[in-house]
Amino acid sequence: MAGMIPRSFIDDLLVRVDIIDLIDSYVPLKKSGSSHVACCPFHTEKTPSFAVTRSKQLYHCFGCGVGGNAISFLIDYNHLNFVEAVEELADFMGLDVPKETNTHHTTQKQDNSGDILQTLTLANQFYIAQLREHSIAQTAIDYLKKRGINGKIAQQYQIGFAPDSWDNISQQFTAKQVVDAGLASEKQNKSAYDRFRGRIMFPIRDRRGRVIAFGGRVLDDSQPKYLNSPETSVFHKGREVYGLYEVLKCNPKPKQIVIVEGYLDVIALAQFGINYGVATLGTAISQAHLELLFRFSPHIIFCFDGDKAGREASWRGVLSALPSLKDGRQIKIMQLDSGVDPDDFIRQQGCEQFEQAITDAQSLSEFFFERLSLGLDLEHMEGRASLVNKAEGYLKTLPDGIFKNLMVERLQNLTNIQGLTISPQTSDKHVAVKRKQKLADSNLSPVRRAISLLLQNPKLVADINEKNINWSQLKLAGADLLQRLVEIINQHPDINLPRLIEYFRGEQEERYINIMMNHDFPLSGAALTADFIGAIERLQQQGKENCLNELIAKEKASGLDASEQQQLLTMLGDR
Picture 1 (cartoon, rainbow, N blue to C red):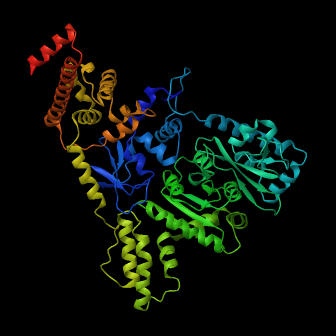
Picture 2 (picture 1 turned 30 degrees about the horizontal axis):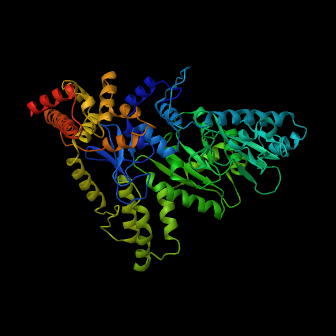
């Protein structure tokens, strides 16, 4: 199942990781009883029904039913395949992924991510070489010099050049390779033509330094000015930013990260010593972008062009940020003068003035209330009521905590309305779902109860081993899965639930396992053991009754041979 990754490494990874820390770095969690909860990131909801349990190292949504271990979360949240999720989790834990030389059987669908990454790496080398060697590369070099980009910074960011031709890159690979990698478009005859032509090329690298896509800029005023790679199996622009690899290479835990608009803004800042700049890839700032950046720094600054579009981008970024602003995180908005971008600013005023502008930047709270108050007369109750109505919906998206309390207090002071309470809208849906789940838990069949209890408490295998179960007699739905669980746990006595469910990833039992592992049993100690033993004994009894009924039916229909007659007499005598 793990492909070229040793299962022992996957097991070790799941033992080391704390799923609370992992998920909290993506989705702000709040302690609630024995679990941590949040609004589910996989479906829209107003009442938190997404629970993460440290003792089980699992997550589960009572609303949409998704759940699993740390690897499952990364697969679902980041749209990764299994190997990518393991690599992502290893990166989170600061570990290198070992590879085995032999292959393992897998039922998972294989993808071509490795081939795409190799194609992109070679393409990057090709574009860099074209900037040095192509006959018309001087035009691109002159453009970069005009923009103030020196050779050292161009080398650091691996800037290249795509000549103005329909088949420069397509000649280097097969049509399938360049189309899959997003480097070319496919013609009706299945041949390919270059996507990037006559452009400065900026490789987009992931946190491990692998080229996953490209951005290309024209050398004149033609449109589109910037062109990015389309989404592929290795590139999802909604969760990637340009320049993060270079930022983390300079400092794995930067004090702050500034988000700018374009590739050349990032490069200009780095050239002048601001080595903590990143840019979104032609999209608005999303919550996924911010959760990614907050993993590395608690302080983020928006720095966009000083025009109307830049101000709107800042506002959209603020709204995206609100659900992620748990205590300790901070966002500031650095509004530049109209017609000035970060590239212009730092070249004209230098690094020191840029950093001072960051220090003087407007806090998110100031920007938020200033924006909402535009056009409102707060001297009159109508204006104050309007501000409350406009702010309330946004403030509800803030995680509970000190910052949310202070934002509500600020709204009260602005409107002179005391006693405001801003909390997520409540409903009875979550309570009803949990009540239904509890009823289902209490009505489980013996085999389902045994499977669920064993999944969550693998050490119970000792009790089932003592029973010397005749598995061939248990012709019940689910008995074969229970037997397989027993075999796996006996082979790995120290296994836990997150590791155990990995043995079923990609197999037909996976969905059933995901359901069984989430049943809740308010039992522990001797009571838990007694409940499990009771389920096994009822399961054995059901098996005997079924076997007895089959023998009686066969005797009536066609008769029994000597061994079957003896078995029937023995079973009747045991009743």
